Amino acid sequence: MSMVGRYHVGARVEVFSLADYIALGFFLAAWIGYKILVEHSRWADQSLNVMMNNYRHVWMARMLERELRIIDTTIMATLQNGTAFFASTSLIVIGGALALLRSTDEVLNLVADLPLGIETTRFAWELKVIGLVAIFGYAFFKFSWSYRLFNYAAILIGATPMVEKGHAPDAQARAAAARAGQMAVVAGRHFNRGQRAFFFALAYLGWFLSPYLFFLTTAAVLFVMARRQFASEARAALDVQHRD
Image 1 (cartoon, rainbow, N blue to C red):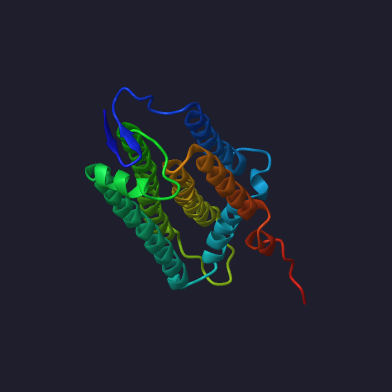
Image 2 (image 1 turned 90 degrees about the vertical axis):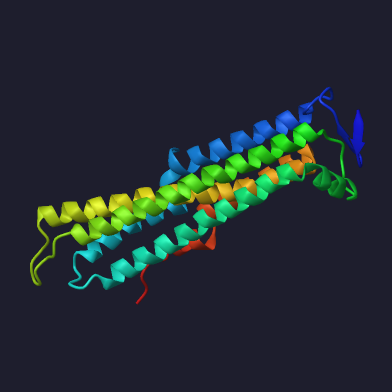
């Protein structure tokens, strides 16, 4: 059995410790639990994401009142550009992570010289890198699909019939606006899931140093994300009432 710095390299060494499995289980439970909290629980309607979804429908209702919809197409283009940025970033990160698999020995030697260097196997390190690739692969698919859905929403905006000035929108126009609004909601939901993967990827990085640090980084990310959804300044801004 050979050694790489303070890292053991050998197939017969146990891949992960009990602490690793517990930390990984907590990570997966935190991700799934957070998704349920903000999307399916009884508190979901009070989350920042769901409240913004309501404003997407309000946006489409206001869109019916405008003769020129340049504002709406500009907003949609901005949303698409932001989504495309995150999708391309995901691919870059995936490429960088895959490069780690080709330089495992060099990376292990480098990390082993750090004060926090711990013992691990090469196989365990590569499994962790593959897990990181999987997370950003998931994020890429979410962002790319969100981009496509925003494109569909833009088409639905273009397909929404014009309302004559001084006339109330008919049932056909309201239905078209509702479809465009719902498509924007679905696009935003997939964008949020992709961004959620980015945040949990930051927590996942703690596993490369220690399962205990992994547990702490996961708890920290979970706390920050939950606070942003239910107790942030952005969330409070949606509760501000009109003042004369």
